Length: 497
Ligand SMILES: *[C@@H]1O[C@H](CO)[C@@H](O)[C@H](O)[C@H]1NC(C)=O
Ligand SMILES: *[C@@H]1O[C@H](CO)[C@@H](O)[C@H](O)[C@H]1NC(C)=O
Image (tube, rainbow, N blue to C red; front, side, top):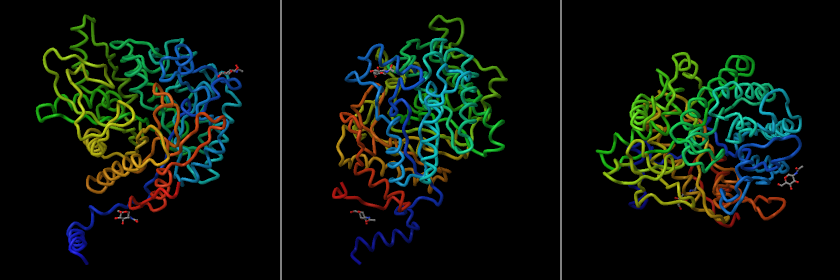
């Protein structure tokens, strides 16, 4: 034994090898994710109606980098067999995908159910189950029926019932075979990003008012859809339903900035988590206070964050079976100095909180301008969520790195490895009950305003090829090995490519 091995050996005895223990707990599950608009294409196939994303990209193509759109995307509507094959090849325990509401209910309402639309998802679900892969379904991943947008979309309070009706149709169709559900993906994007900046559909800018109407209605919609399952389907199907929020870690620049960092966490995560997961329900009190003061200063008659009645608080509170979240990155935040200008929330600064965002030099940038690599952030966020909301079951529904392409994606492998190491520490050192990890994404796809420029896929997709050929990247080979070994202690080399 050389001196180095001897040292490692003795450290291992002293610390029960915890630093070196790269195995995942028994029963821990791995998956990968996609979403309907980003992969399916077939935007006008059979009786499918227009979604707000179809309208958004067609109305003004320059909204999207290179004027790309999701008309064909990965053509998954026609390449379903290949998608199932990839998922099976990786050895995934589950595949997270979303349903297109306007494909299933072309009017947006349950008065007419599309046979072709529902058949597509039946074939996908049955194909996955035949390969031993569990389907994990998201009901809404941003592609709202345009017909409902024309009636106000998420700003119309009636949408909570419309969404519950859609959920009931879907649970009725697929609940016998699907046991894992998410109502909504990242409502903070559908509300904050959309209504503050207009860079995502529906492209309506109403930062002070629309954002918070959407926020409240989307919370009620989630709650009603959760309760439909809980009351009408859970007794016979025994599945679980939650919501996938986007959690972005805010690190205070100095000790003196910890208050603004906590406010930012409450503003981005808390406004979508507190109504559901907290003991008392309703908005995070600190944000309620900030927004009321700001609204009055801006000349509104009352807070533009609509209040919950006690009945609404009780309706939303406790509507979860686990705590799901997507996580990619972190931000460093500090109090703004007098006279500083702000870029818009939620990608930029936290103007409403008087917070400025910066990125430390030691956080590597990624292909997109909005994400920086800060693996410790995921562990910190898990600890924060456990402190805020209790010792819940945590499920990571998205995590991944975007690059500019290439099959030899060492950078993606090291991103996954570093984040998974932090996840292991959270489980083993902090006692976090984390049960599922989902890589974003199964394959390159339409990445919203970035079009096809930024690539998140374990599989590369050739968007110039009419067949949209998929090829495994090095990271796909690596992820497969991780799942097989149930451990992070695996290596891959380029010769597998
Ligand atoms: C569907 O949209 C494509 C463009 O993406 C167009 O070429 C085609 O004619 C449309 N099909 C129908 C049936 O409207
Ligand atoms: C992977 O590579 C590292 C560094 O080269 C090495 O320490 C480790 O033992 C290897 N693991 C396996 C499972 O081969």
